[in-house]
Amino acid sequence: MPGAYISWPFCAQKCTYCNFASGVFPRELEQRYLERLLTELRGTEWPWTPETVYLGGGTPASMEPEQLAAVLAQIPGRPWREATLEAAPGAITREQARAWRAAGGNRVSLGVQSFVDAELRRTGRKHNAAAVAADVALLRGEGITEINIDLIAGLPTQTRETWNESLRWIEELAPPHISVYMLEVDEDSRLGQELMLGGVRYGAMDVPGEDLITDCYELAVERLGRAGLRRYEISNFAVAGSESLHNLKYWKLAPYLGFGADAHSFDGRMRWQNVETPQQYCDAEDARAECVEANLTEERFFVGLRLMDGIRPSAEERAPHEAAIAELIGDGLLEDLGGALRLTARGVLLSNEVFERFLL
Image (cartoon, rainbow, N blue to C red; front, side, top):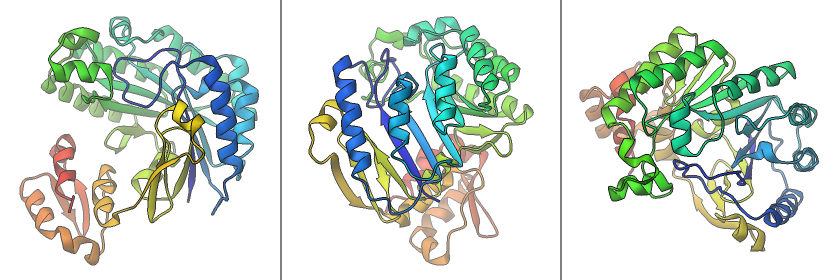
């Protein structure tokens, strides 16, 4: 079933590790952006009714209640099966939580990243562990029980001991969904740029080595599993029934429409994305930046194999990849269970290398 994604790229601060098209922008740009976003939504001819809505960014939880209601009023299908709002810990009020519920929201994703003060300070985050605990209690008190918490393995000054402390907080708070990401090093974040240049700013000199990052990830798999959170995708863990319905669409190649700056869309055949920055989005008569035909022969593998259940490709889908499949099985990175392909435990850790083999 289809979904809808809304991009709200405005943040109170830009975190050093962030590689999204978000940041701190002039206040007046927010109002222009909202008007442009509403125009895009109102001008959409929906080919289907979305069953999920996801507001990401940025920090969409910073929207005023009336702004949030105005945006969601343009999306058909309410009440949706799932409607997720991304939020920064320590900045959620009871009024915001109630407004989200009233607008049709039933899920919140908290960008926690760490429960350790030293790690948070080095990345520019303003919250602490107590603020996260208060947010979780507030949300549950307002009837929002579907809560996700993001963690990042590889933050500056992180050690095995501090990672265990973050996992201890997870076990104590017992959210039904956790996302665990390994630090991405690329030119789209300030920390990534500094690491690529061999510099020392933004705590680059204190980023743990690859082996420790991998150890932290595997430790999370173990401890979260014991806590009843099953890894259903490389970076995502959930108790049964609390998997992200919206994000599953991306990995299962279901259609979705994206709105706002840098938002992506897929109709089952074509992929397109909007212009990247809020300023460009506000100035553009047509927000769409590019449109290409999806290569489903490739995507079926390098997107679908992110799921721990793997994929069951048809003979026609397998044919162009038989050599790669045989080699990956021989290397112990992939396994074939009666025609169903899935990553091995080692394959998960080397997943990027696996996915590259399916690029024709």
